Length: 170
Image (cartoon, rainbow, N blue to C red; front, side):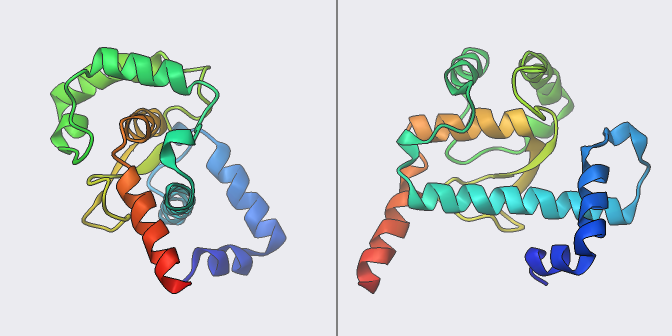
């Protein structure tokens, strides 16, 4: 079912309640299956919008936040050798990796809205969001990696592939 259909099926009151529920901190909930579905839908919508954006606009010119330069600089200071073309999930998810990422992420509290919210991140930047090519990351990890991919030219592949496909249709 299309996420738009799901949201429409909630009605105005249901959608308002869902938006309110999603704005509360995670500690306010246990393992609520409905809430997990709403979070997944929100994360998927964010991913879909972002992928459409890099498909349509030259990624080098995208500004994802008002703090892109700071995020990029701090990211490359903290992770100068992290390969971002094809991510190794363990470098984000292992206990050691989480210890390295935590100080980086926490410095953006109050700087980047929802810096620690869950977001979907592509493993291989030349591919679309699929179950096999997606990991769950914090919003600031998403921003750091995607801003770097944009600046360093790794997302050009997606943009160029989409541009070629549009040219062939005309």
